[in-house]
Every structure is written in C-alpha cells, then in structure tokens.
Image 1 (cartoon, rainbow, N blue to C red):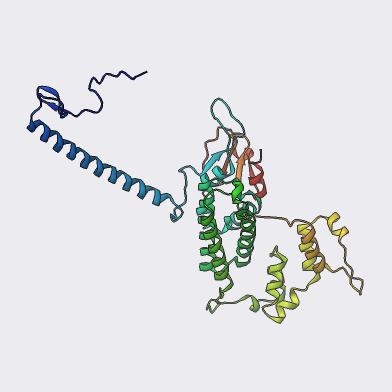
Image 2 (image 1 turned 90 degrees about the horizontal axis):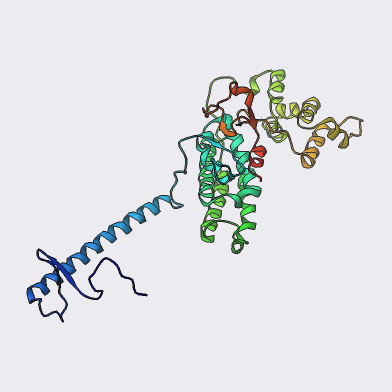
Length: 355
C-alpha cells in the first residue's frame, strides 16, 4: 500500500519555493522557465555543499569524542559520588543489580593508591581480580583496571617501595591473560585481541622496569637501623608481618642476619598468621629436639592462607547497603552510623558481587 503523507509533492520531481508558492522545476513542466531552472540548480548545489560541510563537522566531532574515550585516554572513568549502593536484585525503585565492574568504576581507587594506608589494600584487590574476576568486568572497568595498574607501577618506580608485591601482581595478571587471550573466540574478554596483546606487552615492559630498578640509599646524617641497639632492632623486626621481608632484612648486614634467625621471632610470626591446630599439623623438629619455626612458617604458607591486615579498608553499611571509603560521607539514615558499618576485606569485596 502506498504511503499517503501530507506532502502533496510527487517524489522524483524538483520543486522550488517562491513567493507565489511551490513551483515544479522538472524539465517536463512547461510552465517553468529557464531562470527557475537555473535557480533550482544553484539552490540544490548550495544545499548539498552545506549538508556536506555539516556532516564533515559532525563526523569530526564524533571522532574527537571517540578518541578521547578510547584506550589511549589515561583519565579513568569516575563518578562524583565515591560510594555505591550494592543491590543484588530488582525492586520497584531499582532495576537490575550492581556488578563488580560498576563498583570498580564508582569507587575512587585512583586516589586510594596515593594513600599509603590504602595502597596494599588496592594492590591485593587488583591481584584477586586478576586471578579470576577479570572477565566479569565491563569494557570501561577493564580499561580503568589497566590505567590504575599503570599508576601503581609508576608510583612504585618513583617511591622505590613495595617492589615485590607489584612484581607478583604483574606476574599473576600476565599468566591469567595468557589463558584468557587463547579463548578470545569464546567471548571471554571484552575488546579486540590486538588491544589485549598490546596490554600484555605493556605488562612485560613494566616487569622489566621493576627488575632494573636500583634502590638508592638516601643520604642522611641521622641514625639508621644498624645504629640502634640489638634489642630495638629486634623490636623493629617483630613489626614485620611477612617472613620474606624478614629474610631480606637479614641479608643487609651480618648482624641483622643473626637477629633474623631468632627462633622466638619466627614463633610469633607463625602464631600471628596461623591457628594452633594448623601449627600442630606441620610440626618440624631439628636434630637438637627444637622446633624449626622458620621452616614451619614457609611450609604453613604453602598450605594455608596468611592473615591479612590493612591500615584502612572499604566499609559496608548494613543499614543502607552502601559500600564506601571510611572518610566518604554516604547518605545513611541510621541513628548510629558507626554500629552499622563494618570493614570489608579484598576477598569480601569480591564476594559482595557473587550472585
């Protein structure tokens, strides 16, 4: 059935709007003169030129906007609010559910890595995401993940601190990507495979930069750790929660190496990370009949997860179901906000979005 619209002009004909009204400028119209015909052609050419210029400007604007949001952009995607409402089902007020990628975009991780109290927390969270949760992130969240990781590496290169945890994070991420890139045909990762290959090349480059880092000893006239009495040096070592740091510290000087072999030091480290039941199952006795606490510690680390402790973590409000940083004001209606808030570990953060 033909479409009968309000436009009474027939398609395929050229019409020109004049003061007297619309006139047909087609060649078969005997009423039109040559001046009308030339006017119509010039009008048509001018209109096409203006349309072409408008389309060109529009395409250029879209291209600039796309280039701004592509992978070369180093500005992460963020919201004004630094908190997120965690909802696991549809309601009359909210449709859908909150995802891990959405939470990763909304929470301010770029500022968190600049804070020494939150740095280890963010690094551990990045490692857990790299192990198993990377395919669950959206395209924007995956791009934010790589941008934040680049900032973490740059911070380590500038501060020359926390080198080993970042090396382990990059190695974990590279191993995971090697397995995921092979399954690109199964829609495991979002984006072009060439983009992910380029990101893997960046990871290898970051690893090389961390391997070539040379920690320079600051020039200071004050006291150092080796100038302190042995009792104070041992007290400082007791504050270390990782046995690998204790071994590295013992390799600095022979005197520190002797203190790093203290049995009581390793015993406290084992009791801090593991339960008595776990320790009893992995008892190791030397030829002299003494417990080998140092060997037991590294054996227990291979069998059980170590205890994690962070200076500052994300918090979850049980009253309003909002995930936020502690110094962020979230819209809570509870009378006692402190009693409703509980700290969230990195693994707890991942578990909040497992439905």
